[in-house]
Amino acid sequence: MLVSWAVPKGPTLDPKARRIAIPTEDHPLEYYDFEGVIPAGEYGGGDVIVWDNGTWEPADGRDPARSLADGELHFDVHGHKLRGRFVLVRTDGRGRTSPSRGGRGARHATVDASERGTGASERGREQWLLLHKRDEFAADGWDPEEHPLSVLSGRTNDEVKEDPDRLWRSDLPVASASISLKPSRVDTVSAEELAELDALGSEGTWRVFGRELRVTNLDKELFPGRLAAPGETRRGRRRSGERSRAGDSGTSADEQPVTKRDLLRYAAQIAPVLLPYLARRALNLHRYPDGIGGKAFWQRNLPDHAPDWLPRWEHRDSGSREVTTQLVVDEPAALVWAANFGAIEWHPWTSRVDNPDQPTYALIDIDPGEESSWEDVLTLARLHRTAFEHLGIVARPKLTGQRGIQIWIPIARGPSFRSTRAWVQGLSKSIGQVVPDLVSWQWQRRERGGRARLDYTQNAINKTLVAPYSPRPAPGAPVSAPIDWDELDDPTLRPDAFTIRTILPRIEERGDLFVDVLHVAQSLPPLR
Image 1 (cartoon, helix red, strand yellow):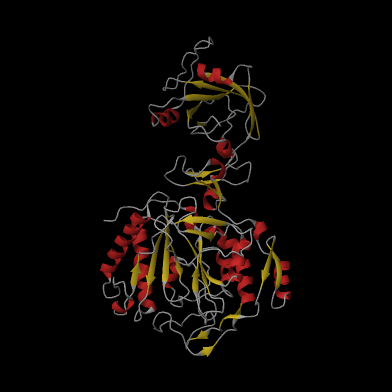
Image 2 (cartoon, rainbow, N blue to C red):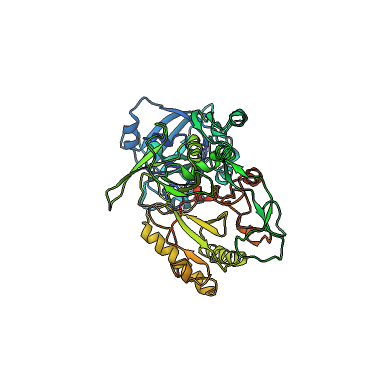
């Protein structure tokens, strides 16, 4: 363990300065080189950098544990920024050192008013002073604020907060508490690997992401070419001012059909972006082995012929005692395998395999009815946007790739599916009361009068919504594309605006617009 103190004003090499040091919880050794963010509400929540590191040793040869017990520890530091002889002295809480129990005699020190004010907010907690001795490393006026960069990344706290690489999860075992927020560069499919796929005949062995995959029927058409509605652009967007039912299509051919080879290529290219949303989650596969015009079915159990290297999870249903062995996409090659297996749609669980009864997302599905216009869907999405702004919570929208919009709300693990579903139901009912002519609460579609449903029932174990960037079973292979909230006001936006051929350039230009759901662990506030 790392014995720890918080030094509010930061350590210094100035021998004239006296810094309050407040003992904190011991930190695990795994925390030594952590740099990233800790979720709000958890101990130490906020942004973290490794401001300095190095080694230390007792200065007087005494047992450091005994010195700490006696209230005074002299030690030499060998760091990048901090060097030389330091002293930790226990105080009486008023800026004065307590008499040593080790025979050293009383010592006294004073602190300035701002330092003393910091200590006052910590009443009831033991306080120490941190001092630097006047030695060859001492530097009058040395200010830690003038040395703000991490010794690991060269970044400031603000820069790490803005674009963190890692998240510390105190609810996990310390060995796995540091979670990567970004896909590894080594997981990006190479141009050589894509060229190897293109060079294959109708089947063969594709070496990709360090795995050998037997791929078949590469020239089979899975999606027909996209049909453009009158006035629609090649990206599937309608000109401003034209009104249509949500998701209707036209009659003129616009794009080439999408083959299985195209789908495998897309799976390999999107895998590094998509993997953080799938990792450690069971994946339900919606399979279309003969393309979207053929029979479709859900696959949850891995088949017996699945390769041994595929990550998997055995789930025992508490009611039926049935055991299913489900795919867990913990590596990019597993997603390519699923695509080759005929899985056109990818639906991850909202809970992780280590605690399947506790979701990490709350889900909202704006499901349009037969008579719902696209403008109706946008109106409902904008009302949700206003509600989230009022509640002060983070949520991210995405196009379904078909007719609607879905919203994911990241939450800290703890609430059950039942309580999460009740919260979403309450929010949906409140929004439905604002526009009752647009919303029906009937379960059966035929009983909704053509109106939209705000579906909160997907907040249940083993119920899912389609993953961001997953293809959808429609001509042209549209994808469920994340959008910015401001894009709800773009008159050219369409629910199937992006396809497997157009989403990658958008990600390259705009980045992953859904990434906030990976970084935020928040509690759902009370609804009034």
